Amino acid sequence: MLAILAVVMTAASLACIVITPAWPILASCALFFVLGSTASGWNGAFLAEVARLSERRDISSATGGSLVVVNSGKLVGPIAFANAYAFGGSYALAFTLLAIPAAAGLVCLLAARASVPQVSPGETRA
Image (tube, rainbow, N blue to C red):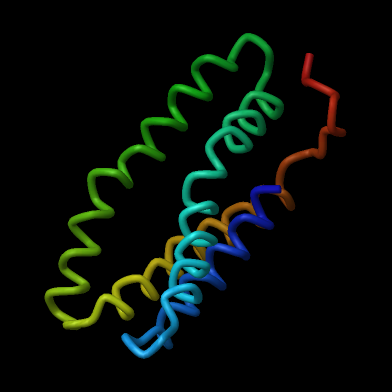
């Protein structure tokens, strides 16, 4: 599920490079609806996966630690976005650059999937 969200977020971010003021407002709204939905739709799936892949005794530490890392993006993200706009002079470019962390997240998910023993859905670690 997280990989699907990362793919959709990356694609929506890349689509922002072609957005112009000439776009119909409905098309712009649809694009940003998809981008916003993927940006806010992953949290529950992420925490469920962290908990599912953790040893039972480590679930609270694992979810808490992962939230520290995840929420650091709330500090750095707006600063990076503002700088991308300031240096690039384009909101389209700034939104398109969101594809970089989305793609990096996808790469991390795929690498983790390859290195962590798989646990079936509904199954938890002992």
